[in-house]
Image (cartoon, rainbow, N blue to C red; front, side, top):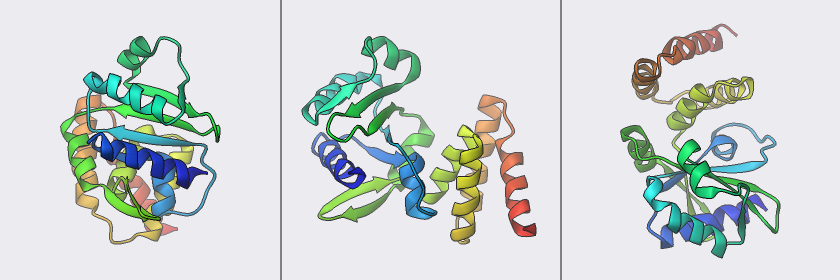
Length: 186
């Protein structure tokens, strides 16, 4: 079910020339271990001006909005949540066009599913997104991804976490370094 929907989404986004990357649990499956995930999170390389195009594309794919006042909700959250009517799978279209997101989308890794290329966030960008989300599940995902992929680019992750620390007044970099240290002692 997920693979078919991922292929449909990738084809439609490519056809509409919308840059994107799959993040969240679906991306973790590429770098980590199989686990239950109930949705598809897509970061789009467009801002809110692209909402009409995404709405039309979603409708053509049989995706139904999960909110009634779409324009207001997306403006407030930068997320357009929909559900695939056939499978019941939720899809979150996340609007963003920050310098970080542009770079992350360019770094996305194309995975071939059948004859369709689907762009997944690079391992390091999955880690950055998970650090920012910061839930216990996210921390466990990071732990597994780092253990399974020891050749990751720590400097890239640390550079962006330091920037997010400054802009969001958080301690992502310190928390990431503590997590890495704990991995070495386990």
